[in-house]
Length: 238
Image (cartoon, rainbow, N blue to C red; front, side, top):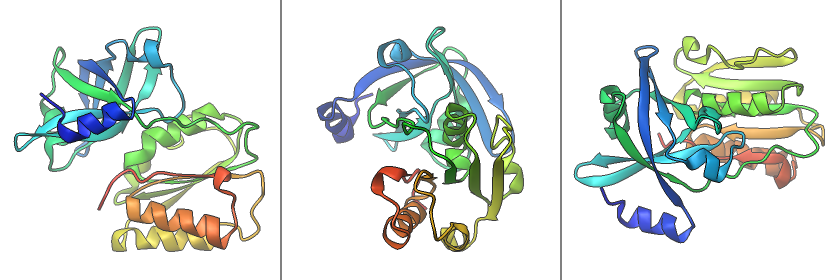
């Protein structure tokens, strides 16, 4: 399958292509499906960093379609990792439901370049949802001693189970029901973020694109948080 104009653009931005092979599949719940992969040499070539993600390619109505997924437990030694798929209607979920060991999928590594702050922050202030849960856990595991507050938006509180996965002390999860297309999450976080921000704190936001944009603007413009202390990336579009 060719990657169309998107693939050309990613190549121009130095994207690197790999082929992954399914090694395991597991239905975790009605809404969550987990696939294990071998990496086609990607981790040995590129290394691993917190919240690392790749673009997987699917076919949709005869055209290439790509979506980004966070790597769960990437292991360069074995060249393996896991991906969690939130199931809904669409080509990515359809492919994940039917994938079996031995199936392959094309992937592009481009755009993932997050590095943990140095020195480590005094506190993490994290905003996310089920789509970014693997990235949240990766972020927290990269800073195991850093206290954190996590505002986690979901339609079902059960979707937040395992966040934070490591269960470290000093970490609070605030469960926020998804309402009004994310507006309720924006209101909740705006009300609870401290007006006098610790200059050594770090804000990490990854939810739907509109919500992410609104909260990032609030942190930078209203609270005056320097841009190097805020990481914001929209993970999906409503």
